[in-house]
Image (cartoon, rainbow, N blue to C red):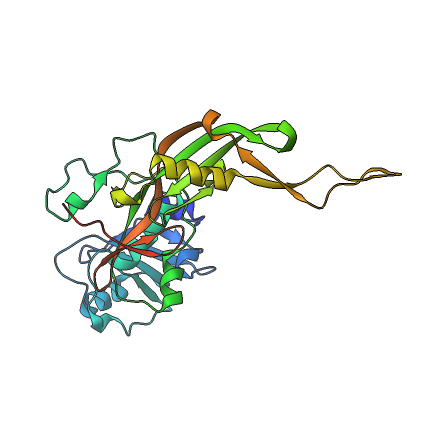
Length: 308
């Protein structure tokens, strides 16, 4: 959490106040914490580590009595009882475990943090749906185009749990010649994303890749969603095809007038070099009426692939 606050341009300064009677541990003092609506107020930041018992109102009252004067922000990994809700939010703000998870998850998907996989995964059936990408260090990850908090707010959805994950896709590197009219040709290169979740192809640029690829659980799409070789070549040809205004036309005093007709430039598929590599799309596993996958680029929900 200290590292993430540093990335978020929080002016964090250390302090060493601790209370023997409190389970809250000091993190630092800051006047700017934009992610939690603090912009110009000197605030003491605390951490409540994981524990079996929830935070109670009496525990917070004892903390307020011993804590220095000023505003306080507590990152809690412990559950918080409903009786704590009416506390004065101008002096004491608590970040719940769910809020911490969303905050860190968004940072991982945006590339601000790099996650590490746990080597010894549980063998329960739920985790068998996923494949660890920790051994695939060369895999690229595309940037997320949606923010889960905004997505949730826009749809009025609340009260669900979520965890970040990666969705398997493919990158096709295509190089070849576009064949124009009258035997003309022009060489080119294209980077094409095959997204088996939305079942479509799109041309992307290098700037789409995240600088730091997080190591998270990944999930594969249904096998039938991948394009076969013949269909793939047809779709690549369609997406690469260009229509250009022709150069032919009538002569005038100032020179040749360009034709208003559009000429088709088609990829020479038989001679094109087409290679693929694995790429991951950020997303979230969310629990609504049932477990769903939220696609991090198109904002759509997809079913988990059934276990076989």
